[in-house]
Image (cartoon, rainbow, N blue to C red; front, side, top):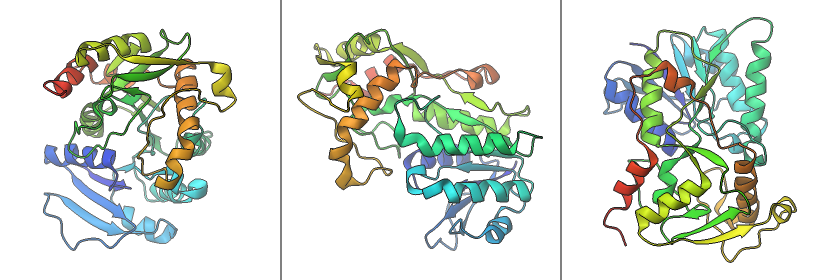
Amino acid sequence: MVKIAIAGGSGNVALEVIDALVATEKHEILLLSRKDVPDQDGRRGVTWAKTSYQDPKELRGILGGVHTVLSFIVTQSDPGNISQKNLIDAAIQTGVKRFAPSEWATSNFEHLPWYTGKAEVREYLRELNQSKKVLEYSLFLPGLFTNYFTYPYESAKHFHPFETHIDFNKRRALTLDGGDDDRITLTTVQDLSNIVARAVEYKGEWPVVGGIRGTEISIGQLLALGERVRGEPFHIEKLKAKDLEAGVAKCSWLPTVDHPGIPHEQAEALAPMLVAGMLLGTSAGALRVTDEWNRLLPDYQFTQAEEFLAEAWHGKI
């Protein structure tokens, strides 16, 4: 049993991880919040602390006795990554053993400018440990959540999927011309949460790069899977790389993105950039992750994408 502090715990991925940790009934869980916190929490072992993340002394007081810190701070809402850097500094100063920065996505960020903050935090941690190791940390990297492809239907308790460029619901897709063999990693948010719960108890040293590979699949295979699951061919529009590199998405539709890191009023304007980033990033291998946690936790059985999506779409028109 250890004490775990969770920053940014109101997000949908964080809530899934918190549930998995609470279900073990083994740990003290301290939830950090910028908002007023409840005097007590009905869940066993869960307490709260209010913080702005701006006061180093306050953070040091909060993190006293904490073994592991999991950060889910939305980097797009943390200018200069000040909150997360303060959290890292306080973790080191108070003797926290393990830290997971706000990753929960993919391996590299080529063509994915919305992840700039994650890249900066990676570099900050690397520099801190350059001369000698001051903090054990792991980048938890599940690739793309399989749950996105159940939109508009929920496929987890808290995770909120939004429309993507491969739309199982309307049987349509936007793909890169010549990109059918590009490969991505799909992992359910449930599997990510279970792996994090097991990682907290892992006796060995955390890997810096913590790939979590549910299913590795090509775009062509994913489209074929979609057509099997949905029972009809998809309408597929192939976009040219040169257009996307110029910031132009020549297509008849664009996905509507609903994400806490993207203001609602900006989502429509950003849609062409997001589609371009996803298609070009996929081509560059940005959505393909390694399998470090699979190898460290070999007994864990991952849910494969076809099994998960076939069940999610069963009986739906």
